[in-house]
Image 1 (cartoon, helix red, strand yellow):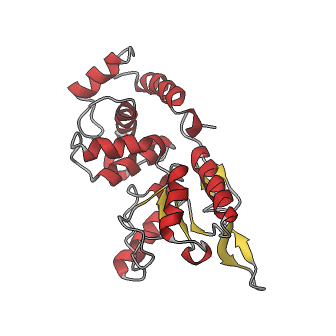
Image 2: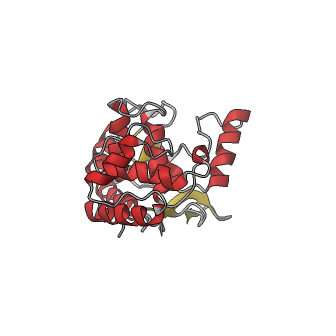
Length: 244
C-alpha cells in the first residue's frame, strides 16, 4: 500500500471574524501517520513549557505547490518555494508554524522537535532567518537524503531527492518522470531498503535490476505492479509507523 494521508485537527494562524483561532483549513490538514503522531507529541511537549504549536501550513496539493512556486517567482512571496515535485509539503511531511506562539527559544524547540523525528531546514536556530518556521518529518526518506549526501545519487540535491521519494510514496506523480512514475517509485523504495541503484531517474537499469534480485523478488519488467507490491510489503514491514 502507498503511505496514507490522515486528516489532522490542530489550531492554526487563521481566524474567524471574531478573531478566534481556527483549525487548519481542510485542504491543508493532511499528513502521514508518523507526521501526525510527531505533531501531536511536539504540541504536548511544547505545552508543558508554556508554548503553543500553531500551524500556518501543512499539506499542499500539486496545484497549491504550483501556486506557492509562482508566488515566489513573481515576487509575491519572499521565501523560496520549489516547483511541484520538490517539497515535503506535497507529501504531508512538512509544516510551517507560528514562531511567536512557541514561547521558548527556537533552539529549545529544535530539541523538542528532534526528539520526535522532526527537523528544520536551516542550519542555525535564528528566528530572523528565512524558513525558520519550516520543519520536516522525513521518516524513512531521510535515508534517501543521506544517500544523495553520500553522492550515491547525483541528479538532485539531497533534500529534493528525499522530497521526491516522499511524494511518490503517497501515490502522487512527479512531473520529472513522465510515464515512468512506477519505475521511479520502485527506485526510491530500493534506496530506503539500503540498496545502491544510482540515480532516481525512472529507468530500471542494471543496478536497479540487481537490487531487485538481491531482495529475492522475481525480476519481470512486464509485471511492474507485482514487483512494486512485493517491495511495498517490505517497506511496510520495515517502517510500520509510516502506515498506521
